[in-house]
Length: 224
Image 1 (tube, one colour):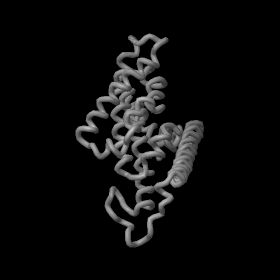
Image 2: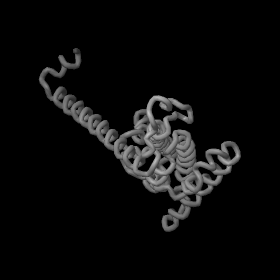
Image 3: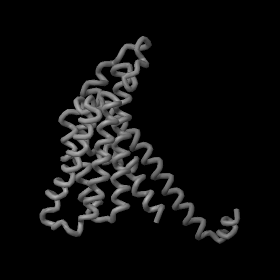
Image 4: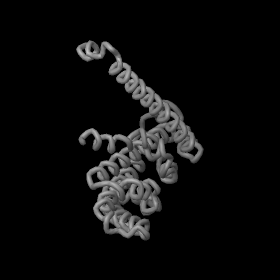
């Protein structure tokens, strides 16, 4: 049971990463990752909405009529987005100003609505919570990776701390839209490479187990 639950969380990190594997939520990904701080703000906000909306949709799934399930999901998601937006405005107004319209647009983020429809509405509370958390962490990691790369090479800073200034001139294209697409493509390629390698390793382990179990010396193998 624990292994199954851990798998629900881990799948969002790489295997089903919403940005790098499923290619969802690309609009905020490309728009706000010009700085690492922006990426962290958006990632945390989306993760909180994912976790809470998944939880409530899972709890209420048996009470929501099938014909109006999508409007109900959007209403639940919108409620949590409104709460998160008010908290961000109250405690981190700079991030609220930087994220702008992309913060309230979390309501229609296809990652959140997709997890509600495909997972939370069909599973129990704990798996739904872990699914939302895993997808949120994977989303945040992808945003943060892009934000760090673009800020470092585009501005020469890391979380607004000058690192490369004085050593190399900033490559402005990294904080422009073409640079965003370039970094996005490179991270997708890297993610696919790692996923393919992990898949081959898993397949090899399965084949080895089958061969070992069918081998006449299986008992000897087990002893070794």
